[in-house]
Length: 170
Image (cartoon, rainbow, N blue to C red; front, top):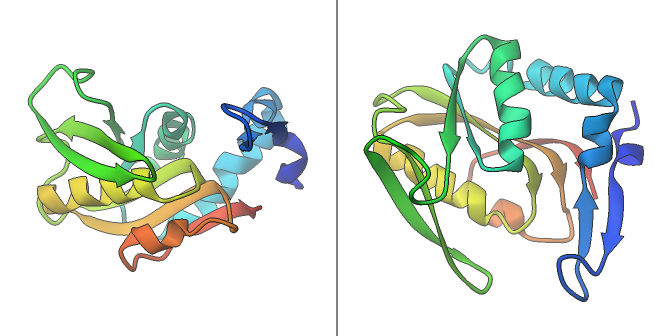
């Protein structure tokens, strides 16, 4: 299935000079969304992961149904102040500034195999932050997956040598 046709290009969003890739048409088309989850499940089903980590908000859209499809747990990674229990947090660099990600401190056991899932790999900052969270928890990343990779950016450089999978490269 040609998933690219379900991704809408929005010029100058959220600011002038940015081309935004909108996944909402893919989500609105049941067969395209099902194909996306099934294709990701096929790529990751033999990795031995017991949990999926995904960052808010769009990572949740793909991470939760993929966890269900694979029969494994789901760990939401959120901004500060959004999780109700004790958290571990990491602050990481963005192109212009910093950001912070948090997860429950008991979300991953030492040595536990996990997948990191997100909608899109751009600069790699969010994934880099999730990798640090897994490292702090003592978990083991066994795979990283995206629906879309923006090949014209250097996102893979922030993946700390981990390989990754994607369904569409733009």
